Length: 251
Ligand SMILES: C[S@@+](CC[C@H](N)C(=O)[O-])C[C@H]1O[C@@H](n2cnc3c(N)ncnc32)[C@H](O)[C@@H]1O
Image 1 (cartoon, rainbow, N blue to C red):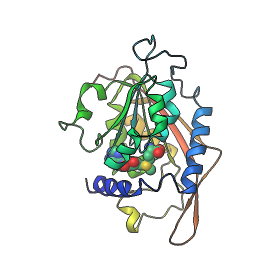
Image 2: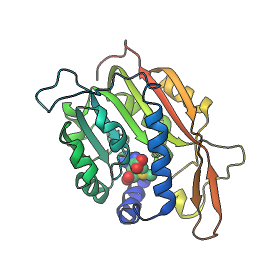
Image 3: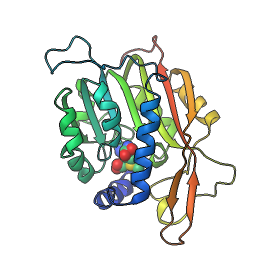
Image 4: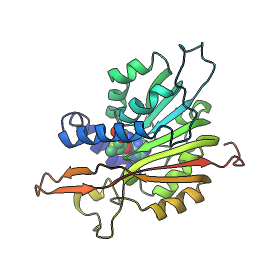
């Protein structure tokens, strides 16, 4: 829980900065392009042609976990009819709910709203996140957040429990590399690792009951500045997908 608290504090403070850091803007644009180009690759029956809420023949329930201010909802939201965001940072959730892009998505997706919560460390609390509307999603995505969780394997298991059988789990994050040093200093409090390998993720997906594993690396790298040293860290970015086994029991 200490890491969750540290993340809450860090992202509550960071929320004002997110829109102004040029490397974040660039990464957001790259991620948008890379995921939009892969919409078919996910093998999801996205709702591309929909009417207004209440007049829809097809539905798609999307959970954006560790949703931040809404960048991922902005990408997948136009193809969903019901959207929930969850994040541990209250200020971030406030900004998500006040984001003009999200407001526009609400026109066609039943109340795309975010709430404060922690499905990873607090899966059985009395919180709203454990009510039925936060289960049985067609798609659960979590972008640039796996490296912030204490244990990514447990997080993937907890999030897979939120999918309907046959539903798809998606994550975007950084590829680990051989030369990665141990996390140290202030950042260790909010992220235990720098990234993940394809093999490591495959094993985690299998343990979480996710099959049809797919892993792809974006053409463009992330360029993350270290404001203290002036160095720029170049990182590969992956997108990973898996489907919840149809035989998995409903939670
Ligand atoms: C780097 S941001 C990514 C935000 C968003 N997914 C995006 O792509 O813009 C990581 C987010 O994870 C959230 N977070 C960290 N630990 C969490 C946890 N245990 N449960 C939910 N959210 C968490 C933080 O508050 C932060 O908003």
